[in-house]
Length: 160
Image 1 (cartoon, rainbow, N blue to C red):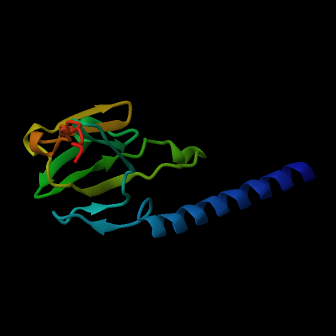
Image 2 (cartoon, helix red, strand yellow):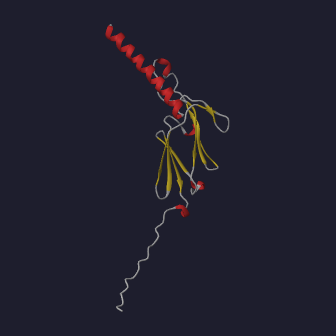
Image 3 (cartoon, rainbow, N blue to C red):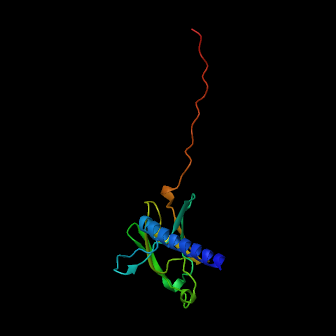
């Protein structure tokens, strides 16, 4: 009996600590639990994580959106910003039967400032396995190019 009460108390304490840390980090980093408004006035509750990477041809963005379907997602370009918004719907009867939700649910909004030199007309998006991959091509004039270096011919010294 003592072991059961003690372990239940520890579980409750750890769960309370986790919720407190989630709230504190969410307030600091602007993620889960926050409420705000998008440009259209829609309410959002969290900001999805975005990874970025470059190669010689593309700016690659990866937005982590587990449990979000194509119909619940919208990607727009507004000026020099890429806007990703949508909604992650809470599973029905999941947490109500003793489970605990660890992922943030609700509406989300993320605006990403884009650098100059991208071909915004040829953007490609692909949603798979809870990840939205976005490729923005780099315009030819912005791609790195090698500049040839001319060598000097060796000259003979003339004796005077």
